Image 1 (tube, one colour):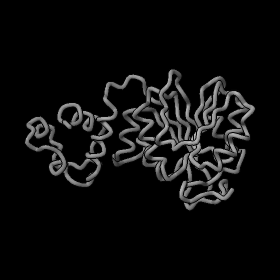
Image 2 (cartoon, rainbow, N blue to C red):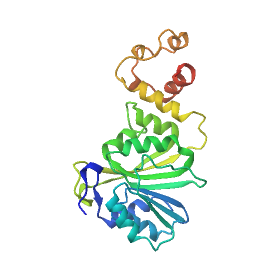
Image 3 (cartoon, rainbow, N blue to C red):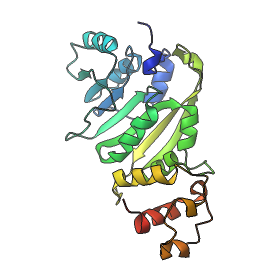
Image 4 (cartoon, rainbow, N blue to C red):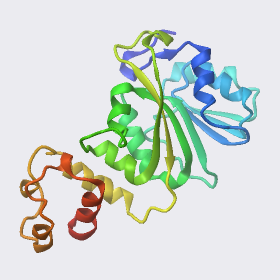
Length: 247
């Protein structure tokens, strides 16, 4: 099977990297989701760790057919042929996501999952190194939409970087494996907060006086109007959202 550029397919081919990814967490007797499993090299290693169940989400019908036949005798595994952005993740049990994500939709997927953080125990994801660095609120000097959402919704760690040489075909960019553990005590409407961050950081280099309602007296008292969104701290962002932001 030839990898499809249109679907962002770069197949992982190194079993040692698969094992290193799975060593980050104990997946024994857990409900696991893998998005974009390719030919199943990571899937095979997941199975060895004895998950309670394993859901494979594969958009490519050719790969879906291959995986369905490969695992048809394993009652723990369910293979679905659907776009991961359209899949309904809601059911009674919490799930762990372990995936080498298709890079062309990785940011959209992660943002969607962060908004339903009560459905997941953790996410262990291979993503673009550049995106992982933007997500890392512990080391990013400047705020952005992604690291703001990550900091509000979860605990984040960048576990290790991955060489281009462990993929076929080799991507043009480096990769990183990250771990995201959703927080359970969030008192925010995350759908509204996500919309707020989209507006706030759409013009992140403009002064807030050009982004938010300067007629609000409370905003003026905050003395933030001459600052840019990327220079705010998380407390200031939350205060602006909680007190002043209306849709």
